[in-house]
Length: 250
Ligand code: 13P
Picture (cartoon, protein in one colour):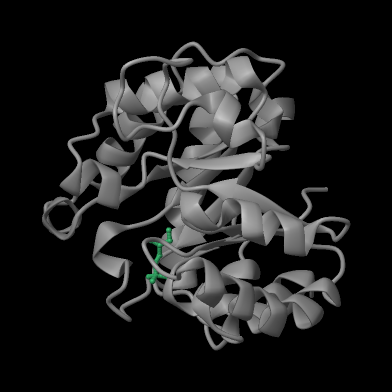
């Protein structure tokens, strides 16, 4: 019912030349994977080059962040209309944005509403820190972040949303969550989405797991009923990303 979704978040990696090289190495293998929505999220500076290489393929593009204002005196920021020139998707509220760049539930919400207004699909990231996890606050934190990010989202836009559950302690650590633990949180997120938008819409929303996903552990996540794909960091910079997409197609 939900098409599996695999997105590669390149984070702050790859120059234009390196991005071209990576896409030409991975492109063929990735294109061969069917029945999965595949998305690459390079840095802004490589969007044009990657868009040119991927034009006419079934591999989509996403940005890693976006400002909420339409234009103006916001030095260093990128506006929704600029993102839309290249991207169907935008990652919003990634924990690295929250942790290092002061993003809050409120500013994530502004970005989500700007995405809605501009017809860009947000990949909204939520997830608890290690301390919050240890304190047993996972459900509460994920609920607060999800509610905060989605305030004002309209019912007709909701089904296209993508949510990514990324426990902060699992990001870049090699310590992935277990399929079972992630499923518990994904189930809670879907129940919350049903509260907000109704069950039919909630059943259409893709909920991705992110945090040390590899070709070796991907199947464990994708076999869970409420895990619809992955948001991949480190492994999206190598061939392993193809193995993850293949696991999602099974
Ligand atoms: P890693 O896959 O490197 O753990 O990163 C996950 C992530 O943050 C994707 O957005």
